[in-house]
Image 1 (cartoon, helix red, strand yellow):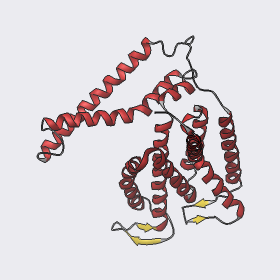
Image 2 (tube, helix red, strand yellow):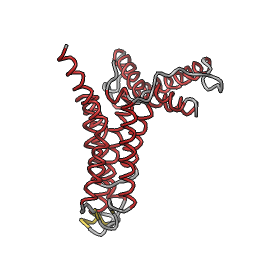
Image 3 (cartoon, helix red, strand yellow):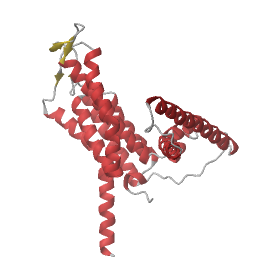
Image 4 (cartoon, helix red, strand yellow):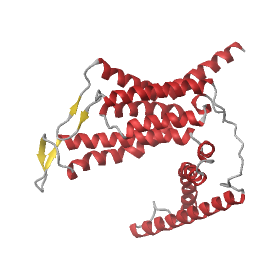
Length: 297
């Protein structure tokens, strides 16, 4: 598949973008920042993965998110706004419920963006960026990024084979289903270990990690990469200044406090929203460019 738009950008540009967005999302749990990140991340997942990719990430997060929202008030009883009392006498507070919702949003945002990372930041790009600095870490990251898709594909193959033999987890009594599940799990663990050993032997035989080993690279920093990186750094600087000046103040405990007043605070939300939309804008711009060229042919 031909890579265009943000997929064709330099790996350093892609790494800087995802690191910036994920840093503000994961380490700064402002509720509006999380909502913006979730909205922009969902748009990009839908754009690059279609409806299938979007609902795939939605199914993974929905049940877990609901559980986080409901469980957090049961184990955390901080906050001054008491909604009810649990059977054990502990309070069920609005603050703990709100914090659970924020934690669920954080998990959903992270999964959305990591779906995009897995689609765009391929293993060869990881090797290119970190292969010379830390070869072992580069190989580990590369294997981790590609492992999930390979694992799911292999799991489907194993389940299909077990189903034809009448040993699937969807048929039989409860005990039989458990046994079939253990059989499938055992096969997957064995496959994972064998795959890891084969990969390690293959990389060793190719001289991976040797100090004098050279590598060929097709990546070059172009003009659009320079512009993209400059915009990311400017947005990061603007956001960091706002955070440093407490323009994005928020608090979950002991009471919910969210300060969204002031023009400066609103501009921070706009800047972060535009930062999150940068890959989507790059892709749409590239598609419009190609359509314009095709219409003139």
